[in-house]
Structure formats: structure tokens, C-alpha cells
Length: 266
Image (cartoon, rainbow, N blue to C red):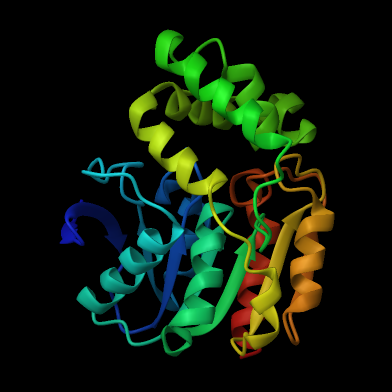
């Protein structure tokens, strides 16, 4: 379980090593790099796969101060420098995609390609912010057990939540959510909901880009991601049927196929 001190905080990461071209995985709010386990298993024979945990999330240390998307973007760049990665395929889901977009705009030399998964370039819709703040406040006093049904509906599509064959996988995701620490989540949530839009800058992105999105995503509805894809020159759009906001877990084979085809085309 390697970790490195980056920008004042210890970040956890997993690195398969090897001589293959690097693929860096950046996870979404509430989760960790483990949400890419299926993608790492699929790609590791041909690529060097690095999955890291954002500051204050997963197995990384708590941030000593509040942070924003700019800080998380700086963390990603600094981690790549520490690992000697001059360029990579960057795969970011939701919040990880927010980081990827900012890298493509500010540090394009670091990216050979960008894949956005259940992510978009707009700011958080105002209608969502009170709901998320209320959930964060509730969790401070009562934890996440009572919130679990609501959070699962945000994170996963109906197909995943109702499939008896995936009960064990669903239970594993629930167990991860129940370990969350409200103060850490509050800082991460603030970074997500307080992010600025980068929609007006997307025309400047020259990095080959793929946008993968679950058809049943309720957290970032597909129309928002389609708008992002349309504004990035040459971006390809891949919709994953039956998936919600966590297609890497819900429909891993479809995501794996999209990544392999995209990387092979570059």
C-alpha cells in the first residue's frame, strides 16, 4: 500500500508497475481508487496502471485544510511527477473527471488521452447543492446508515440495485459507504459542489478525449455529459446501457471494452 507525501498530505496509490504505457485512474466522490479494480485487472497486462486516492478520501490522509478542484489537480500532477510519469492515459470518474478536464486545460503535456466517466464540465446545478448539504449535515449527527438507500440511488442505476446476481457486489459497495467519515466527506463535497464551470474553455482541449456515461445516471444526467463531449473537439461519446453513476463497477466489461478500443486508436 504505497503512499507519498504530496502538497502537504500523504496520498495513497496502487501501481502495477511494468514497462507498459501509464494509465492513471482518478476516482469519484465518496469512493477510492478501488472503484477501478475491474479496469486495472483488465489492462494491467499491457499497461502500467496507477489508481490513487484523493486527499481526504479512501486510504489517503485527511487534508490539513479545505481544498478545491485546483488543489486536487495540482495533487494529480505532483503525483505523476513523483512516479516519473511524463504522459499518461488519464481516466477520471465524476470528481476524477473534473480533475482530468483541468489537467487537459492546464497541463496538456501530461495527457496522451483523457477519458471522462460519468463527468461533465459544468458547475454543480444549484438545485442539487441544498440537498447535498443537508445530507452532509445529517451524516454528521447520524452517520451514513440511514442515508444509505438515498446515496445508493444517486450512485447506482436501478438495474444494479435490483439484480439478485450482484447482491454480493452491492453489499461490498454498501460496506465501503458505511466506513465514511463525515468531516472528510464534507471537505470533499465542498470541493465538488463549489467547483467552477470550465464549459467555455473546452474548445481549447487538444487531448484526444472519450466521454463514457451511464444511460441511467441520476447524479450527472447524460445530457450534461453529452454537452461536454460535443464541446471538446473530436471527442467520442460512449453510452453504457443500464449503468448509473458508477459504470466502472456496474458494467465493467462495457467500460473495459471502451477503454481498450480508445487506447488502441491513439
